[in-house]
Length: 246
Image (cartoon, rainbow, N blue to C red):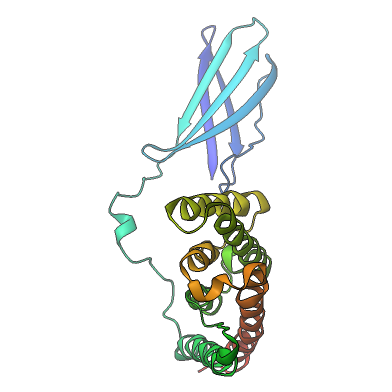
């Protein structure tokens, strides 16, 4: 929008104007046309949700007097109840946008279940609860940051390893669970791979007696193996959504 400011200094009214582009970032830089009496000028912005958007301008004059200018926009802060309402969608999803993700989820769990039948005699299982959450994320929100393949694989492998390590150090119990979840959160933040379903991998291993004999093989199976399989199915779903719309 267009911003016009005026203020008084030494009984003289000074004016400046600028065009400010507002976006999703927390800081805006606005080139301003300033009076010659200013040697330098710095702009900072703080977003106050309860009072809208506030821009703080700070500068020095030749007389070394500080001048503070504040301009508040007319942005209305959202009500506290807005988070309890369904999001406003610009368009209703088509039938194909609903069908293909649902079909992909069905196919994913069906393949995982079939693998379970084949591997049950060896005491292995790949149909685990975290992969159900991964399926919902990959098929329903493929463009979400947490659905990135990097985030998914990095988080699933790392969190599974953390769960095995926590169980090895602390044994079964609350201490291993709490320590592993805390370590998983720190790990995902550090590696920029926030993927919420992966946090349940340590809890599954610590409580799953049938999985504990896998030790660190748990990282590859069902963790990495299940995710790689879901990635292939996701590509099929995305192709169907793009080329077969109805």
